[in-house]
Length: 99
Image 1 (cartoon, rainbow, N blue to C red):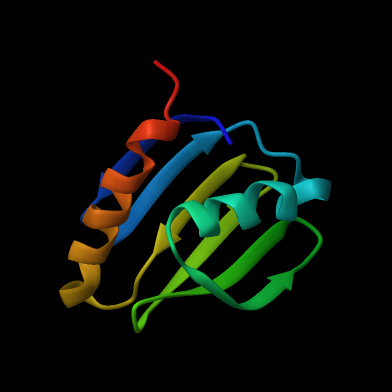
Image 2: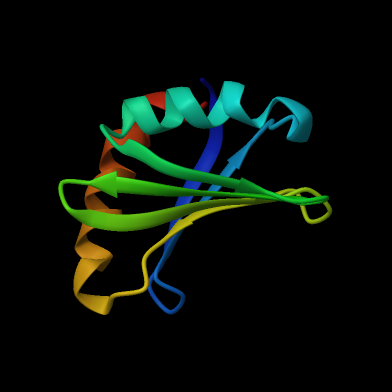
């Protein structure tokens, strides 16, 4: 799994991920990502142009999103007090970022 970048967005409680993602083979990207972040996949949803997976990281519920048309991938939380979890996950992604 190679990432181009990962950026924290505190305003939107998100961790933005830039990578070469194939919409049709999203699981080939998302499963290794979840494993690298030590997250459990709880639910998988998808539609015509979007994937949305519910992840669990040590009791924190996070959403992994990917939108095909915008080629946008991000992990988000709905709780301000869990933004620190995204900060920690961001640190775990550093070895996977291409320099």
